[in-house]
Image (tube, rainbow, N blue to C red; front, side, top):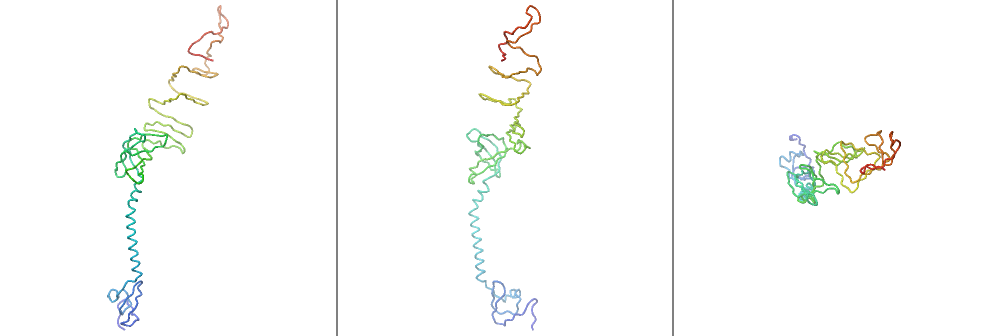
Length: 268
C-alpha cells in the first residue's frame, strides 16, 4: 500500500468515480485518493459548489442587514427627538413681567434657549435666582418649543425635614414651616410680618405675645373679659366709676361712690 500523507485516510471509491463529500452543505466532484478534507482543499483537488440552501441563507442575511440599515435611518430623527425631549438646564435670566414667566436657560452642551415658558403650580409662584436648576422638556421633541416644568435650588432648599412636613422658603432664610408639632413663621427682615385684611380672627385657648414693645393703633379698643390684669397677676385692684371708695377721716369719712373717671379708658 502506498504511503499516505499524515492524518489522511484512504477512500473506498475507485479512481475516476465521482463521490460526495461529507462536508456539511457542500458537494465535490473529481477523484481523490485521500479522505483527509484539509489535504484535499489544500491541494485544490476538490472543487466545491455552494448548495441552494446556503445561497438562500446568505441572501436572506444580506436582505435583513439592508432592512435593518433602512429602519435605523428612518427612526434616527425620532430617536434624536426622544433623547432630547427631557433635559436638565441652568437658569440664567428670569422675565416675570408677563402672564407666564419666561426664562433664559442653558441646556445640552451650552445650548442657549431664550423665552422659555415656565409652568408653575396654580396659586404658587416664585422668581428663581440665577444658576438655579431646572427640568426642561421639548414639546414633541422640538427644542425650539421647550418649556420648564420644575425648578430647584440646592443652595437654599430647607434640609432635613421630617416625612410629611412642608415648607415655603427663600434665599434670605425666611420660611413658613409646617412642622409635625405646629406651624413656624420666621423672618429676620426689618419689615417683619404684615397682615392686610378687613378683619382678622384668632381662635385659641392661649395667645402669648413676647415683645419689647407692643403698639396698638385703633380708634377704639375693646377687651371683653371678666378679669383683667395689668402688669402681672396679684396686683392692686383698680376702681371704676360707681365703685365705693373708703375715706378714712375728716368730714367726708365713710364710703363714697366714684362719680367720674377717664374719658379714654372705660371698663364694663
